[in-house]
Image 1 (cartoon, rainbow, N blue to C red):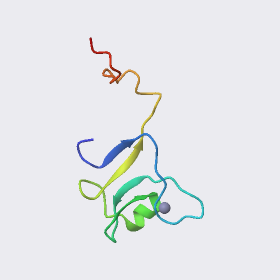
Image 2: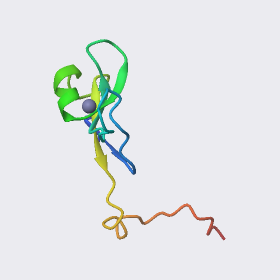
Image 3: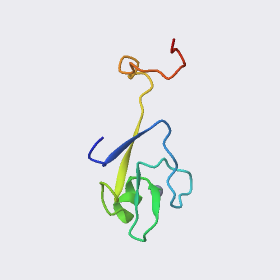
Image 4: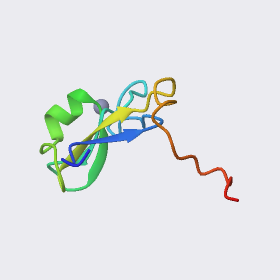
Length: 80
Ligand SMILES: [Zn+2]
């Protein structure tokens, strides 16, 4: 994730823009209006300024089932 265009999250936030029903955001980014916001795809298309450092990140949901083998270090207090 060194290109600053995506970020891993465990839970997707809701889109900060108005929806009749809450919609999960797919991006956390700066808007054309200035403030940062969580945005769904359509609102990112309308209001986002792009991806990258200082612009925005795509939110990628962390897959709880696929990272078991990848986590060599667990901070669970097993130091001698
Ligand atoms: Zn939206």
